[in-house]
Image (cartoon, rainbow, N blue to C red; front, side, top):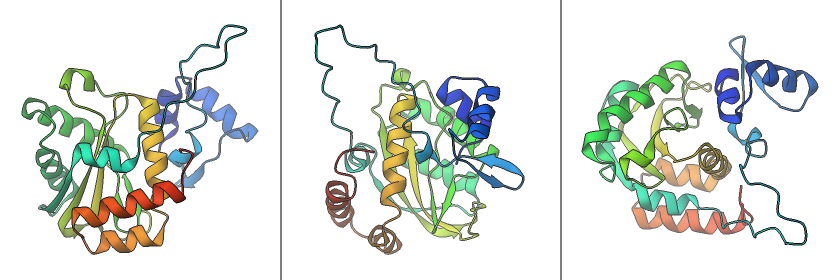
Amino acid sequence: MLSIQEVARELRVSEKTIRRMLWRGNLKGIRVGGQWRFPIENLAGLLPSGVSAPLEGNPPPAPPRPVTIRDLIEAGGIHYRIAGDTPRKVLREAVDATTCIPARFRSTLFRAIWERESTCSTGIGNGVAVPHPRVPFPMPQMDAPSLVSLHFLEEPVDFGSVDKEKVSVLFLLLMKTPQEHLQALSRLIRLLREDSVLALLRKAPLREAIHSELSRLEETVIPEGP
């Protein structure tokens, strides 16, 4: 979930505009500890695309095929037995385990992820957390693709999730643009509503089983994108 400040940053508007959208019912949020929080799937359709209107007489270009969560996990990898007894230690280990990220950038990336986590927990419930840096993060300098890396923790760790369940699975999101970030997060959260996915993740299964189930669900649950 995102705060008002984070929503304003990602939608490129002022905090006053976000509050006005909230009051008018154009944006749905929930109260958590006296503060407004916004589920990421509520924002995907509001993010500016940055694409200008087509010239008169020319048909609009076909929308690109959305990158699937399976595609992103294949880029980031699946990692087991991530050690640590605090969120900070676990996130440090998860970043270091994601070897497709150049080693010289890992400390900077970890600090960015921990800064975001310190502001608001990314524990979404059911033993899952979705840590990520604030977006946009300067990924082009890293020479790495947009990715999601999946991490199974050696022992469950308290991330301060709303449902109080300790986290045993991390999906680390590292996307190049705010729009990619919102689309990927929206797709991932939709998949994590499926009981079959949650049951599979609790078993820390082999990579092939994870890829197979994600492919099946992305074709049936969200066949037309986020």
